[in-house]
Each structure stands twice: as C-alpha cells, then as structure tokens.
Length: 132
Image (cartoon, rainbow, N blue to C red; front, side, top):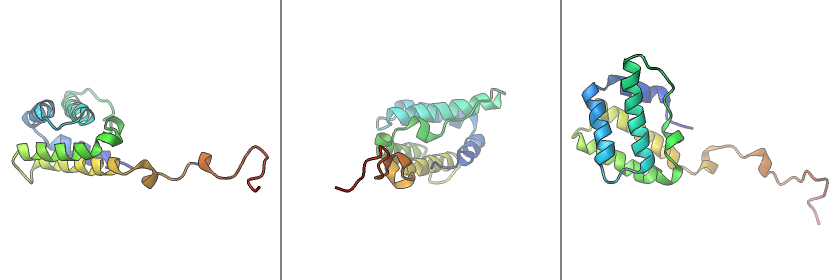
C-alpha cells in the first residue's frame, strides 16, 4: 500500500525548475530530514528534471527508499520543509502532502496492511499432528 505514485508524479510535473531545485536544497539542508527522505526527495526531483529533457525511467515510490523506522521522523521533516516554503497551499504543498500521506502509510506496521503470509499458518506440513 502506497500513495498513488500517479498523484506524486502529477504534483512533480506542476513544479517549476526552481521549485524542484529548492526542494533538493531543502532536503540537503534541513536538519530533521532522515536519510531515506533525503534520498527519495532528491531522487523524485531529479527524476522530474530528467523526465522534462526526455530521460525516462520509473520513479521509485517513497516506500521503496524510506524505511518504516524513519517514517514518523520523515513526517515531521516533510512538515518542516513545507513550512520552509511558507505555504499551506500551492504546488510544493501538494507534493509534500502526497509525500506525507505516503509516510503515514509507511509508518503503519506491515502486519496491519498486508495479508497474513501462508507460511505463518499454524497447520503443520511435516505430517505430525498439532495436538498433544
């Protein structure tokens, strides 16, 4: 479960070149930014800059680069970056809101939003009985 990557891609497409570079700067210079968030934000902005000049490759989702343990701190950092831009609305806010939604999903323990694995069944497969 991840934020719809199309929403993130659309938000990136709306940003100016200057806004993309400002976000990269913010990711590099904001103290509370975790490594995963920094890497994803840089990658997403660079992906959009490359897309505009015809270099096409798949954009990694936030969950691919931001580990579960960094999600809560990442939410705080994304809010801090959002406030650096001094707007509650606008193109940068739309992207950061989509990222914050993704971070909330990443913060949920996997056991909550993934179906149980068939390997975790209590049924024995070695022929022995579970009863004593």
